[in-house]
Length: 347
Ligand code: NCD
Ligand code: ZN
Image (cartoon, rainbow, N blue to C red; front, side, top):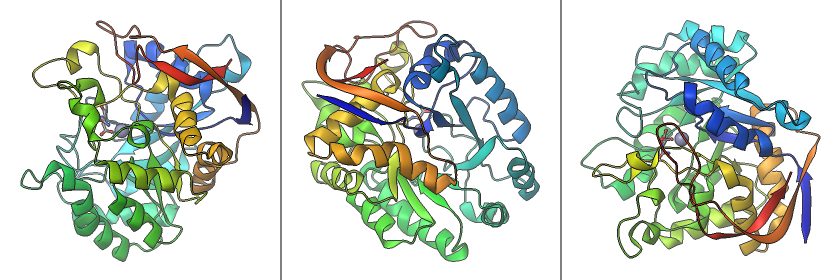
């Protein structure tokens, strides 16, 4: 069986920087036409000028052999801090390359030390975003160590998102990598200014995957995998045909030795087989006919960008995912590495 669909976009992606780019960018360029590039470098990309320089480094890593792959477009973002100036949003919106600003609550995840300590400190920036119709992308977890890690998304909705939404009713917000039924219900309860991305790992796995026969660092990401009932709610949302839910892989590579250690990094690397993972998830839901809109239409529509016009073709055919891929300072282990995948992208 074959499935031809409009070429998808990845609305949430980490490609890292410098030497890492030649290992990460080709996987995404092969499948996706565009990707929203996360700014959580070390130090983070807080200015338009930094984002434009980062964009050039990414473009230099795009393979030029295949004409379609070579047209891959990185869509840049800025990292919001307590000190971001509202004027920076004006500069960003004038550049045609910066498409969004990312909120990381300070300390919530990888490279988020410079993140926001209290979103109220950024309300001038949010006003500027609303004015310029530029989306705010949120890592939706509170950073309060007193809150159970499995409840941090739900508490974020109540304590951060609801007040911000009340203050800025027409601010475009993407609730990134949602993981709970609470987040699905929240997004459904809001109007068209709120949308959400969903990752392949949160569609395919529940938190048991983290502890199957021992501790499994390659299934650890943030927000962490949740209970089965939440996974099911995400599958219903992704395959519902509701335009508020679209594809964002959150592919976040960390070298094997940074994951398999006493304090392993958060982040799952899915870029080499991202669209195949989503195809399997949609197939398992008997919803392959909903994949194209989720992967290729709704994100572009929300960002106000044209839909892609070329296509990709997937084939239902078992293949073994490589157990690892080369990366800076040693290998990186992909999601589903060494296992059988049921869909394959034909190049
Ligand atoms: C991301 C990373 O490694 O940059 N990690 C992750 O677990 N998702 C950061 C993030 O998006 O939270
Ligand atoms: Zn991310």
